Length: 194
Image 1 (cartoon, one colour):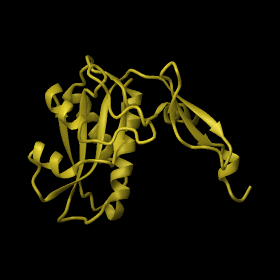
Image 2 (tube, one colour):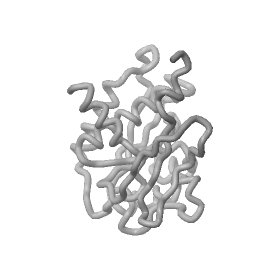
Image 3 (cartoon, rainbow, N blue to C red):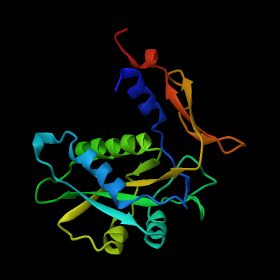
Image 4 (spheres, rainbow, N blue to C red):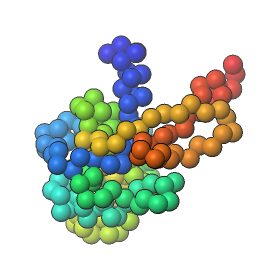
C-alpha cells in the first residue's frame, strides 16, 4: 500500500456513531479484524489481549445502553433504533498476564477500526463502559477484564475533519444537516521543532 493510500485510509477512519443497522457483519469478517489486532505490536510480546465477538441485535442493543456515546453532543446520548451497531468486539485482557495493558488495547482497537474502514465498514472505540454490567451480560470470566469496546457497522453518517489552529475549540459537533464535524489541530501547530 502506498503512503498516499494509507493516509487516505487513516483520514477515513473516523469515530462513527450511527450505523445502518440492517447491514450484518459476518463472523468471518469479525475474525479477520481480530486477526489484524492479533498481529499488532504488544508490550514485551506479552500478548495479554483476548476478544469477545458480539452479534445479534438484541445483545447489541443491550450493549449500546452500557456505553458513553458522545459526551460533547449534549442533545444526543446514543444511536436510535435502526442506527445501532451490527456487531461489537470486546477487547479484554487476561489479568494473569497484565494489570493494565492500555497501550496494547488502543493499538488493537485502532487496528480493528482501520481494517473495518478498508472493508467499507466503520466503528467507534469506547473506554466509557459500564464494565460490571457488560461483564455480567456477556458472562465473561473474572480472569478477563474489559479494556475497550469497539462498535462496528455500516456507517450511516458523514464525518468531516475541520482544520483548526492551536488554541481553537476542539469539541466535535453536528450541524443542521447532521454532518458530524471533528476539529483537528493543523500539523504545523503540533510539531514543536519546526
